[in-house]
Amino acid sequence: MVDLKWQHSLLIFTSAFLCSWMLFAMIWWLLAFAHGDLEPRDPDNNPGPVPCVTAIHSFTSAFLFSIEVQVTIGFGGRMVTEECPVAIITLIIQNILGLIINAVMLGCVFMKTAQANRRAETLIFSRNAVIATRNGRPTFMFRVGDLRKSMIISATIQLQVIRRTVTTEGEVIPVCQLDIQVENPLRSNGIFLVSPLIISHTIERGSPLYDLSAQSLSAEDLEIIVILEGVVETTGITMQARTSYTPEEILWGRRFVSIITEEDGRYCVDYSKFGNTVPVRMSSLSAKELDQTRGVQEGTSETHLQGWGLVRAGRGGFRRGGRACDGSTPQPWYAQSEKQEKDAEQKGQKKKVQLEVIGRQIEEEGPGDVSD
Image (spheres, rainbow, N blue to C red):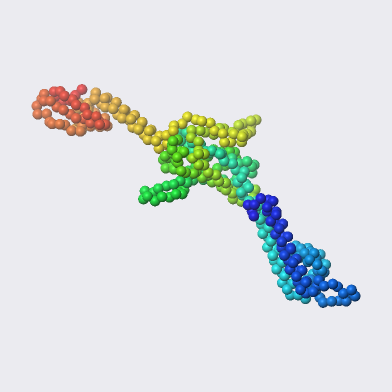
């Protein structure tokens, strides 16, 4: 009844009272009929037998008495006598049932007027979510706003990814729930919903969206659930609003337009552009592929730097056998002698030194020791 429309609730409310009045009106009429209270009066006004209920002569009078008993109006014209114990029991039952109906109906009306579902309907989410680059990282984002002036106290937001997962043992979990960390400097999921906010999640190592790319997005079997909870300021009732985003509702390479402007020292929100997005330049690779690409580039740059150091070291003498070839200061991080093919037996004998620096091999031939 709480979730029904108001017209349906009022119809049930009225029908409950009418049915109870009619039911007990029928019972009172049957009691009067069985006791002979409905028989015509003596024209000579001789006192007859004492009735169960005074002044009941028809079903209409029985119906009026039923209303008086249940609503406790008490006009005083009709009353139960000591003649019929059944009438006394019926009076007690009707009073108890009337109190129960009043309590149930009043509780339903109160819950319907103060229920949190109505407050949750004033919280709006963007129709689409987006994935765009923010601070150099792929970021999942959506927008949430509150249409009412009253605040949501202690508002928290939670994101979960529901997808099909296969464990390393081969177990298939058709509905696996994985939490997503919301980007927040306070390291918590609390938000202050004074104006529309863009909720973001940075896609990095450990994120359930780490392997998601522009090509695989449409083929993914997942759903991102958004849960916003808080306390209604006016009633103190905890409310919860929920929405979800499927792969078809996630836009790659787009961001939300700004809807907050400053006019005459006041901030104005244009809700007509609440869900509008614009395209941005973004790679179609997943966050994992981007990290791998950056790792290869960083490794290549380091190799080039070390190779340049090898050339510089060659001018000052390579390190061989733990000593510098020309007696200069040892430089162990540039080069290291791997082995000497054979010892020189006499001066002028051909020598070959194999030096390995980052997979390179240098051969030098000549009389005497290796020198510049």
